[in-house]
Image (cartoon, rainbow, N blue to C red):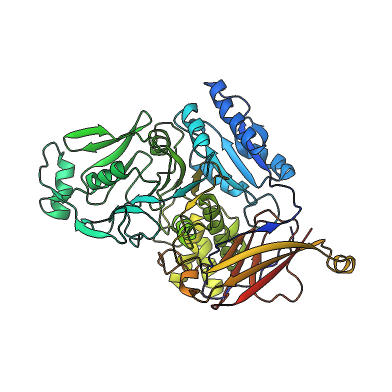
Length: 528
């Protein structure tokens, strides 16, 4: 593709939320590819049924690999799909597998951006993978939520919402159906430590003295009571467990189910009847299947019907990939589907990294070395060359660390999104195509013009466009972003365009837009 990149400003500005997207063009429908093993070792008929379901639903091409999906890189370049689903057994899926998928998605052409949206379709068994496919067949609007974070306490996105706080341990909040805001209260304390082992007793005594807030029990009361559409967590976790800070209990996995491990009490979490989205975007390691069906990821997909699951495969640190994806999702809710939100956030990351140093978009990161407190030799050299402060250098390190380590499980074309919030659809975006005249085509080398029009309402909010300051310690203000309704062919900006724009076949980013209320703004993109 042809790409135009104008340098970004010092501050990252302004995501303009889009209420309406429309595109009229004669571009062929975007293609979909399914990658699958040449032969499944066990239960082959059921796993082939998963492949067949995706193929039929999306009119997809099926490509086969012997050992790894990365064997298909050359074929993917020829097929050039916009969406890729990888069907595979959990025993094949681990940290390096996810990292390699992220990297391969950016190698379809010469630019640093991902050329397709991808998702892994898997499960505790073939039946679980099939359920993931079936649950993504119909669109879904996320209306209820439960979380272990305080950051969503505005609760404006939900008809009902409840949370336990993973920072101010002991706080909880709940918004019931029909209520307009949260009611806060203190989590009950656990006084009976019967059955607790010595390690837990020492932890409780050191942190709390005698009694401890029963955080996990309260979380589960909300979770099992509401059976929410969306779950967001950000507390201590591994591939094998999830705990709430200050809690003496753990969620663990066993035989494709979640079970609660309390002192003196163990029980299974109730299996769900309805599909959901799980975003453990602040948890370490929980997105790593670790090459086994006996993982937390598999248990959430299996017994809790997580049709989409997005999590880290390494120890989290800076958190831009996870928190940024959530910020794109909730900023102007309803605008992006879950896969689109996480895709757009990753491309925003790549655009910034390319400006800092082309090397950061391709250099491998050493995840077996603890760089959380020490700069890598690569960044030490870059920092010295660019005159960066230590804080600026760690900012770069955070992006580099997060570049390839988020796993997306689920159908990448599933139309699942937040419900719209009244009063926040304060602008619209439309796009239309027109054929160039013979003279224009000869002068530009393009055949069509895509005109993108942004109209802001009289009560348009710039701050809301920027993301309302959500999670600023991880994600600064977002740029205006636009995910093209269909992928463009060889897009370029017209001569004379001076705004800070990043353009790719799939998206457009505008930094420093400074949109004002009651105005109309247009962008022209030339393409084939």
